[in-house]
Amino acid sequence: MDIKDFQTFPFTKFDKEWALLTAGVENDFNSITISWGGMGTFWNKPVVFLFVKPVRYTYEFVSRHEEITVSFYDKKFKKALGIFGSKSGRDIDKAKAAGLTPKFLEGGVTYEEAAETLICKKLLMQTLDKEKFPEVAAPFYSLPNEELAHYLVIAEVTKII
Image 1: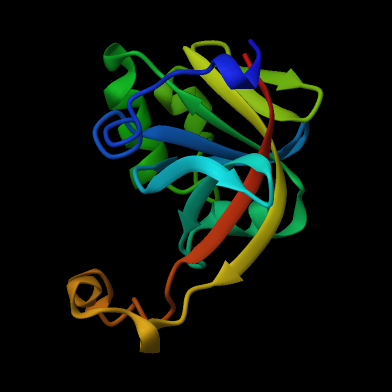
Image 2: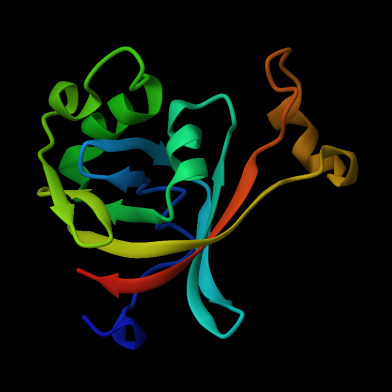
């Protein structure tokens, strides 16, 4: 699919439908469910804006790899996406537990069951400064283990399948 032809519902795609962020390459990847993100243009490139907590195992993969994918699924996979968001790849094979089949691509990893996959190249990864957050953000960082804010990841969408 030509990136210019991609059409979606930007205000529900992440928040209501969820997605999997997969970072890495064959033999070195991990995935996590994400519900915060967006799509648009930055530095004259089509991009996704994603947010990853540094306590999550996938953060390590996003940190060391340029290859990431963002994949979207039909509603029947919501329970599977729940496993990716509530379990750690440090402890279990999340794909196996969720019943999803890894699919290795040039430029990243996705899953056979994905309805859409954005193949991306990481452009920027930067911590968000909690000191500059508005009051509306406070409830998301009030727990004792929420000392560090999310990292903002901006990635160029290079292909859509």
